[in-house]
Amino acid sequence: MMEQLVCNSAEQRWRVGPLGPHVDEFAQLLGAQGYSRAGVRDRLRVVARLDRWLAHNRCAVDELSEAKIAHFLRRNGRRGAVRRGDVATLHHLLSSLRARGVVRGRCVWSHSGSVDLGLICKVLRICL
Image (cartoon, rainbow, N blue to C red; front, side):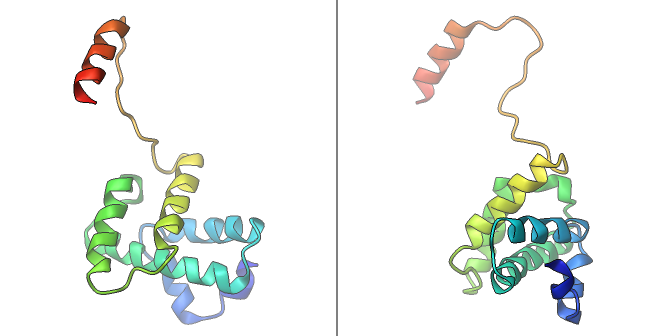
């Protein structure tokens, strides 16, 4: 599937930023999930825009997070560049990068000692 997408010079540029090394695997994942060539290409376009934004902002791929994606979408949304499906595509990309260990999963809280679950429940009730 990806071999058919490689020929266009614009598509070659999709592989030059921080996400570049991961584009082919994501495209293969999309193809395996039943996306058409056109569907894969559409999704890779938003990945390419995110890639350029990450490079421009000097962000490494392992810094990618939901917050960075939201910031990117807010910035691009002002120019009308966000299309239907872009949010889902970028979260799908983030999930696939996390599944492969490229990006760490969200860490809400970490503690190596004993845990007082009663105290945690009280804090959560206050916060919620």
